[in-house]
Every structure is written in structure tokens, then in C-alpha cells.
Image (tube, rainbow, N blue to C red):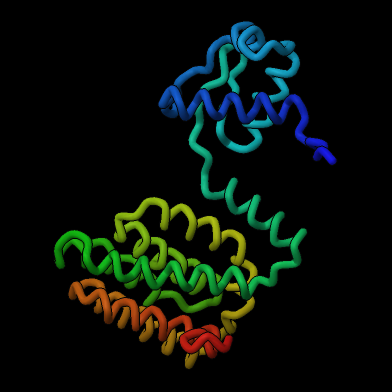
Length: 231
């Protein structure tokens, strides 16, 4: 029994356009060939081409301009976050699953950051974010400063894929992160700050193993049982 494809013609053309972008090594800002040329190449109407372009624009892969050909765009982490959010809702994936994914990536991010650049450069990359976290008092400010420090670590890791994925995961679980952060709790604030100071100290000193351990301890405090897999 043959399987009936549910992919529409527009879907197929969208994938073909993405293949052109990749195969031709097109960069952000490069224009697509004219719609008429693409219609002839794929043997479809210009209406289908416009629908495919609209689909890719909605996914952040193209940018449309009035009266001009669409250009290649760079999808942001928000696009991936939207996809993950939708998938999570449809598959009933609990926020804790995304938190665990984030934690696993953060451990690698911290270890890589400890091995990147020199000690002075690592300190310059992280100390401002840590100072902001030290000065944060209210929950919203603490959450914002906390996430900014983690993203600074991801940036320092030198792995751009890690940074993009972590940014998208943060968007997906932002509400859950805020929910888990107590309001006006000085004991929690001080404990969290100590965790982050230990992480930054390990990274700046270039100790990848200690950076990984400190990050694991931080997430184990936020998600009891994380370190031994019993969360």
C-alpha cells in the first residue's frame, strides 16, 4: 500500500527554495532569482512561488521588500523557540524536560567557555553580567540578569550553535524560570549568586572540569535531583 504524501505543492517549492539557498551558498541579504524565473524552473505558477516565499518569510528564512525580490534572511532564535513551543504543546512536553535539555547544554557551554580565550578576556566577558546579577534585587531583575549571564557564558564558549539553541530554549521556558524564582527571598538570592560566582570563577581560571561541576551544582539546586538523574 503506497503512502499518500500530505506535502502541498507550496511545501515542496519552499523546500526547493531552501535547497537553492544552501546549494548556492547564498548569504544574508542576497536576493532570490525573479519569481518568473523560479516559476519556470519549478514548472509552477508565480502564485505558488509567492506562497512559498511567504511561507519561508514566516519562518524567518527570507525577508520580503516592497517592489523588490525577496532576500535571504537569518532566522533568529525566536523562530526556533516558536517551533519548540508549538511542538511542546502538541506533544504535551512538560517544561521540566526543556529545563533538563537546557541544563545539559549549559554544562558544555561552561566547560567550553573555560577553555576559550585567555583569563583576562574571560573575565572581561563575564564580570559585567555577574556585577549586574549582584545588584539585582527583585525577581524580574534577577531572572533577567541570571539569563544574561548564562547567555554571556554561551557567547564565550565560542560555539555559536550552543548559543542559538540556548537562546531559543530560554524563550521557551522563560515563564517556568520566573515561576521557579521566588520573589523577595534573600536566602535564595544569595545562594543563587554564590552559585554563579563559583561558575564564573571556575571559567575565568580556565578550569573546565570545575566549571562543569559548578554549573551542575547550580542546576541541581534549581532542580533537586538533576545531578544524579532523579529530578
